[in-house]
Length: 60
Image (cartoon, rainbow, N blue to C red):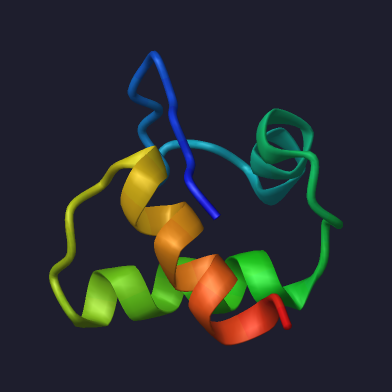
């Protein structure tokens, strides 16, 4: 699956509800878990990084 985003979205300064609305995903603990992974691994604060991690761990 190819993801092509035109604008960059900062993840760390958004609420889980805002992220759910932006990416059309359920607002649940999975969003919080992805943000936790991004912070502990010092990953980039970007929409593409968020979606890659979310897809890898939670989309099957």
